[in-house]
Amino acid sequence: MTCFPKTIIESGEAGPHLVITAGVHGDEFEPMQCIHVLIDQLSGRLKKGKLTLVPCVNIEAFLLGDRTASDNLDLARICPGDPKGSITMQVGHELTELIKSADYYIDLHTGGTRFSVFPLTGYPLNPHVESLEGSRKMAKAFNLPFIWGTDWRLQGRSMSIACENNIPAIYAEYEGAAVCSPQGVMDYVDGCLNVLGMLEMIIREQPESRVQTIVEDPSEGSGHMQICHPAPFDGLLTPNYGLGDKVNQGDVLGTVRTIDGTQCQELIAGQSGTLIVLHTFAMVREGDATFVIA
Image 1 (cartoon, rainbow, N blue to C red):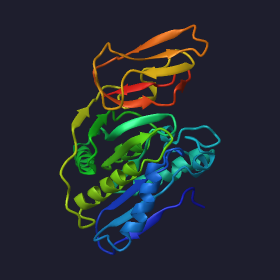
Image 2 (spheres, rainbow, N blue to C red; image 1 turned 180 degrees about the horizontal axis):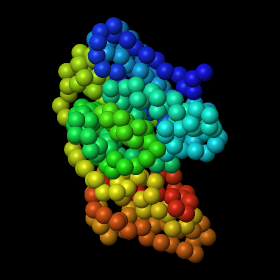
Image 3 (cartoon, rainbow, N blue to C red; image 1 turned 30 degrees about the horizontal axis):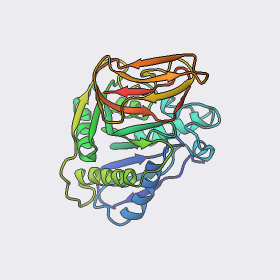
Image 4 (cartoon, one colour; image 1 turned 90 degrees about the vertical axis):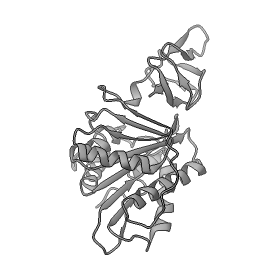
């Protein structure tokens, strides 16, 4: 019994195996619709190799309308999972085995219900040079405005599995905020088709580059979005900046104020760069990440 549905498209000709997954988190919707579009568009179009498409990895989380399943484990933190463990651990095991079967891997995400993310592709800065170069080429081909290379030592993620097995891989992030952006869906479809074209798995002319910024940060913990600029207490978040804005270290990114109004604290930028993640759900819990800068 499998944990999640998958569509396999075979060309009948030798070539790479590309795996594309959506729904690692159950509240990230643009990737799911993207996979449905790809399933509809790519039947009979593959010129070589094999394509595996997964519209939703974390089915239980999706049915709950939440980031995680009923065991409250984050699927993006527990890979390689355990076939005898809880539902998320079982899904993590099956996802790990699928990733290990790939020659190239794309994992599609969004900010879910509480965050919005500036359109970006990312990858771990794998010490294996050939794999890293493959990931860089995939990220450029995917053609979103921001590219972010980060710490390869982060564990438990889909990218961790790809990195450990020297599989060129990227993840993508695009908006979120509890909606399903039609433009986000189409940009994801175009990005996946661009990578398929780069790999010569389909016939596709590569478009003009839309990449504006490439940041590679090898520092320990870079890419761990959930720990950035934590809320000091429960309250209402008022941001001073929007996605894509340039900020300087020391800028006041926004404030958190308790609901009774008695406490208010400024959130100070810990570095200079581009604001790539914003906690768009106005209510924050103590410790919630509020802003991510790269």
